[in-house]
Length: 322
Image (cartoon, rainbow, N blue to C red; front, side, top):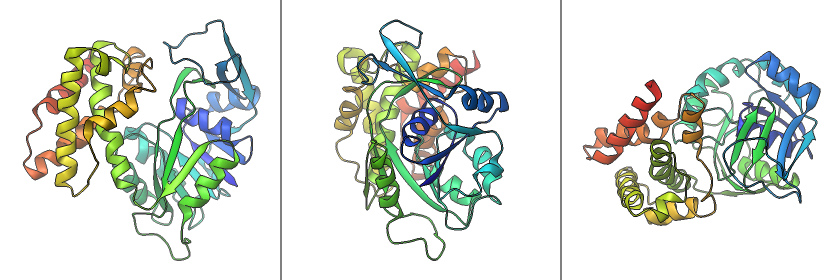
């Protein structure tokens, strides 16, 4: 399959390198120098010496890891994605519209465009910017740490779940189950993937987990497992998860037990420093508005009180400004 990957961050690099082993992949980077470096050196994927995903420690060049260079075509020109059958959107949630808008007159009608980003608003943003695309939503627990331009450490061998069909208006002839085609393409490249009929509960379960884990890790400098092992953080995480689940229920979404969503996300990534913490450590903008902010907006629309979600969201924003 001809696949475009939009975004040269940790997740985009990880998926581009994996997919390139079985497919014709073009990685769209924001900066020309990054694209040129990847064209020259490939994507350097750091793993343990035996090829497993590397331990998710603080990003550093440490011994005991092997960095495999994977040849990936890269560009900074959106026009180069004109012939893609599918595009994977892997930029930060706040950059979604800016990243995909240049593709509006580039992609053919009916091109599959799938978001693997954090948050629950990306699909709608992409569908608005690309009205002729078939927009699919996906949930992934693939973790990665960006070490430098073109160099990434994969911290687990995650699973990606696609919505089987678009939840947005799709062009005629979009096919019965485009999500199955993308899941098959991932599987061909050795990536664990599947498609489901209803992606909304999974999107919300991931949002619930992110809302409970990411801000607390970012504010305390702690790895994901702290929300399970630290008594004080666990109490806060339970409340954050419950507030998010209450908003989901008001939206008509049964996301299941909120604490089980947190446990399922935190246990296999217990030593991982989540992306929000990584962003603050690097002085970058975080995705708090796509996580806590998304819950806050919906809570206000429905008159639901989510005081702890509001508090940690404001604290992360304040930390960003610092």
